[in-house]
Length: 223
Image (cartoon, rainbow, N blue to C red):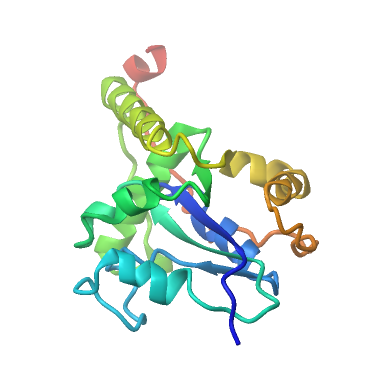
């Protein structure tokens, strides 16, 4: 017989912020089920449902459903803009109305590296060359960067504010890379079941990064 007496969690993130790294580190633990971006049509091709199934049923039948007794925590990843990609307009309302869900808000401290990584990822995907892709040098306009950084910070604050009654913990990709054991312990302290620690093995590293090759003019450097 399965059970539902486990901690439910949600990884809130944005592209190029370490979502895969954090989720797969959780998934290594035998008592944790960490699902991927189930509400992103680009990521859920192998799931036994599509966007014709209401979000409430997806959560009840495919996420926070019955699991073996050894499972003590269950969650999934959701990009802050992810719900707009699929056809689940009521997803945010459902998550916001359930304060029993623990929220892990993942972000990137270095907004410039995140911006470059996101741009290069999109260019590589469009090229179809995979690891053979070599980015061209680029100029970066300070005003464009400033606007993007401000937009990103507004999105972070806005989404976090949608969960005022939830247990919410803020994490950054850089924190995880600098001191994963400490951050892991912080996450576990939020677990009411006190399940045994996550794997002590080194956290799996991110995919091989694309080295940003940017060309800055003197005007940009001076700015």
